[in-house]
Amino acid sequence: MAPLALGCIWIGGAAFAGLIALIAAGLSYEWLGLCRRRASPLAVLLYAVLPLAVVLTALGEDIAVLVLLAVATAIGRGLSPSRPLGLGIPYLGLGAVALVWLRQPSGSGGVNVIVLLLVVWASDIGAYLAGRAIGGPRLAPAVSPGKTWSGAVGGLFAAAAVGAAASAILRHGPISWRPVMFAVLIGIISQAGDLFESQLKRHFGVKDSGTMIPGHGGLLDRLDALLTAVPAAALLALILGRGVVLWK
View 1 (tube, rainbow, N blue to C red):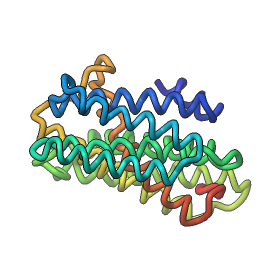
View 2 (spheres, rainbow, N blue to C red; view 1 turned 90 degrees about the horizontal axis):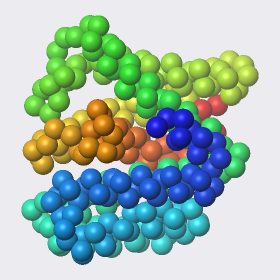
View 3 (cartoon, rainbow, N blue to C red; view 1 turned 60 degrees about the vertical axis):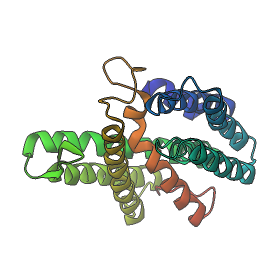
View 4 (tube, rainbow, N blue to C red; view 1 turned 60 degrees about the horizontal axis):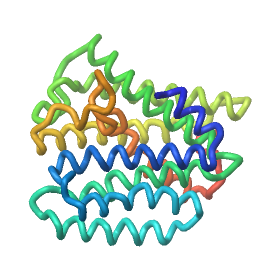
């Protein structure tokens, strides 16, 4: 999946937005399955909002997208108070539209998204390797028994290393501490996203979110960290000014 994703990020525009719209549709399918609402025409229609929101974001309709997601969330909450049908709209939707929004500036979008992915991947891989090598106390045994504090720290070191490397390459000079701190922040948020998805699976009583990726579970199992990291990166880009390269 990585070459396809990186290729679409590099091309940008309709190719990238189309890929994210397809992913949003796949995530919607998984979420409806978790909520046991795939047979409900109204729920299916409600979650058609997610790929639509991605397309509207690509067209620059940012305010309309936020209103659409807010209304869909409220309707979802009304349809299923006991099962978090409405929670999936902001949880999946904000990550999808933020990714398209972050990619849009021609001068910085591609770099910001690619380095963001590398930071999230490094955090995940670093946490796994450090946790396996060092072990120690569990991070959240009631939610995800396999995760350790040593793994969490190792993941943050790996994320920081990617941030430092990106700064050195993009600045063509001394490393700036800003991207390193951004990378650590993204690493923390991505790990929190991983734990959040683990808690969701416990709530739904399932081992995997789906079966779309043989041997790996569902799309949500692979994208849980990214779904929380992307809105944070988009917020940083909004605060610093759209078009700024976050990692210099």
